[in-house]
Image (cartoon, rainbow, N blue to C red):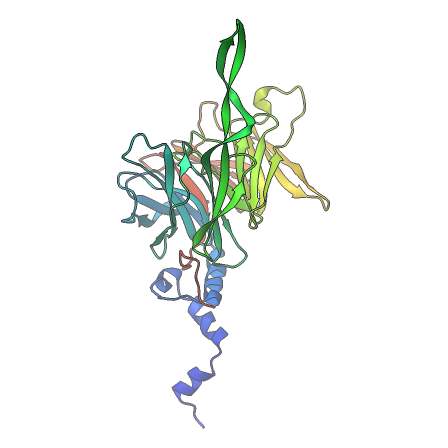
Length: 391
């Protein structure tokens, strides 16, 4: 008996249908109103075979994002993001990228100049579908620009945003830094400031709300190379990592998906080395093939370390040293890693190091140059910004 078209379609399994649908390009599927979790995973797996970089060369009134192949360094316009809810006259800045979802921030300015609380607008965006989601405002931060870090769960659609802020409350049992001197009964005494309390709250895509998870042992360092100075972080191995201090011994703050904080020291160099042969100001955290890595740039060479587990505990393992063609006066503005490549960006050029060939390549920047550039690994997807996908 000849089967009708309806009978043939009915016999097609759900998996077969999804496999056929996954062959449609991500840009075509972005018009679908709903996305199944299985389809999302299939599309990510397919897109991941050709992972690239997402680049924002310069900050502007509208955020222009470009995709780039690390081999050719050729930019192709990916998306323009300019949500209507954004605070007027402030620029957005990209701080993370994972599974096709990016996180961006911009400052909120209060017309009351005496207001000592500050905050950031935090956005979750999908450059392919052009969807944007403004997260609810967190707890006001007292004279401290909040520090942001984004983590992603094992479920394809889950993410968490960590926000470290200052409560403005004084910690009576802790003494702050020296602020000067005062005289009492003819004697000089050091005048100390007070220490303020810092706490962390986490936004979860599964709940759509913020939850306070308590105090933090230290706060991420401020980096003058970023317009939002405490947003630099990486996510790797289920944890968010921030640099805290580059002064010996140097510190990193981490938090896992359960909200547990940990402070680890940077790798120790041998005694007797010159200052520029140890941890330098040009030190960057990178995701090195799924492990926490540290790139330390010296005047004539670089060191790469990896945070590894030897079966009993974690420790820093020295990976390699190599020469760098970067000049002493060349300011590196952004660093990332993709597959076997380490990508550095200065004001006018790309510097790309291939860890397999152990060779550097130099490529020119866009004609406009770089201004507060961001470059991150990127995989196209149709995941919704709110984290919700159908089973």
